[in-house]
Length: 386
Length: 119
Image (cartoon, rainbow over all chains, first blue to last red):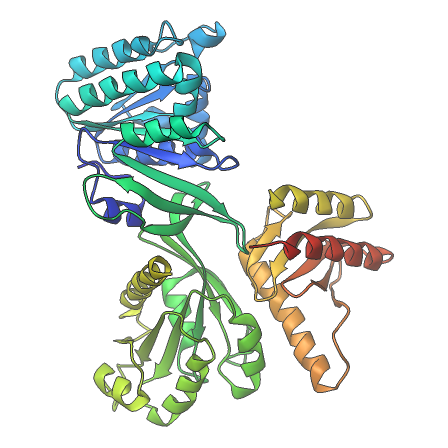
């Protein structure tokens, strides 16, 4: 199976079987080649063969595009570049594999077949930097017929094929033919409600039932693609360990503390297993509740941190949680290392909440990432149910 | 693209005085746009929303209405924050706030207009 390196997407795809083709259909305004570069890099890092077919910019640009992510393309001996650009603009090239006739899709087929036959059967991925260019250069019908042959050839050598495609307002008939030609179509749109990000939706997949699944992501340079959650709030009674909990899982922590107590909104970024989330810690004293209403809005999830040795605070904690309405939450039963700490079942029963309660010792980091993983799962389920 | 429109707002603001840059932030602290590239803009955004929210709550306590702007004065730089409609705030970092209030409020009006048609 071929992976994309985008965590949630790989889970929904279950990997890309060799022989399958996938299109990233990107709304104009999003840099479409970034997604293909990310997939290519992931596979090269995994030791798989990568073939990158460039037709919209010079092969020299590939070095720059990788460098934007802080990746050194020259490290990868398992990468082959097919130059479909230089002969188009009449520029000299140092590449070994060149598309001699960039207006003829057969010329692409010839170059790719030569590489595939030379390499023999070895799992890998072929990434085309621009399907839109192939359609424009080679003619829509001819390009798609040739692409079907390329996909078939690639499959017989253990390769999957990936195409970046800018979804310009093409004719419906062409979009229908594209949908018919490829095994999977992944649509990428801009989301500009508040925090700018991209939304990825599986519009077609013919090897499982995950059509319609979606999530938000952002492209970070350096870094690559991360599933992105713009806001998770951390709330809880005074001294329950919220700041320690945030510190244990985050980087770029911005504390707002005086005399050991949080007196304003804290911010931190969690970057974990391909997920990036902005964390907002809101102080727990009752006098700060008006801030909670203002600054907790638009959260996609809430961690409610409680001190497991202080059940008398649970009622207040539950009232804080209720201010957030029906969004995903995880109750963190913190300070499990202290004598008399209630276990999660007891915390759940005493608090009277329907949902996840997870144990933690934030001061040592125990249980912190487990809570984060559970939160991410719940947010993904929530987003897909909306 | 809203980003183009935001960029234009900051081009106008930055041409009006000694402005280091600024941010457009949702009222609840999410970064919408930043013209400053050497800061942790997401954290800065959260703090700006905290500043304005705290000021609003404090003003409300004394029955003084909605704050027109919040200014944080440092030795060399000042932060000026104002509401930009019900959904956002606008903040700029300036060397000196003389004459900048009008520029800030004008920018805030433009932000409000852009966000009025948000989905």
